[in-house]
Length: 144
Image (cartoon, rainbow, N blue to C red; front, side, top):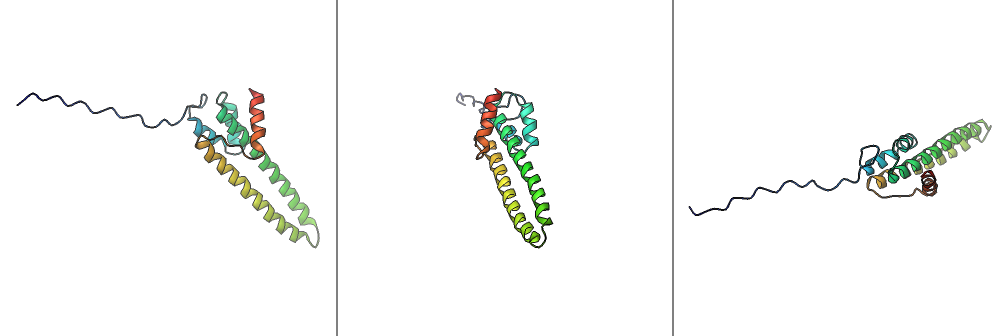
């Protein structure tokens, strides 16, 4: 047989696409930590305390804190107004009915904002929730 050239070894497997930079304090990819930080109020508080250097995660955590606080304030106000409307004789039942429709619509808006923020964070897009985003950005810049 004539001299055969040796078969080269197969190339080593590639590591695949980079999943994103690691968050410095949580050891999670930055986009995953930011998405988890979007869980209103508690997720934001936890990741704001834990994460000290990744501004992407801190921004989403601060937005979550503000959105969660707004959600909580609205919930308490809705309960109070429900009680006030319910106490009005005659038209109280009608007012409560319409108020419950308004509350349901506001809750849907809060839910949509939360889901969009989580998706944007997971896809590494810095997205400002209307009115809340600029406030969160100022808080983050002031804390540094």
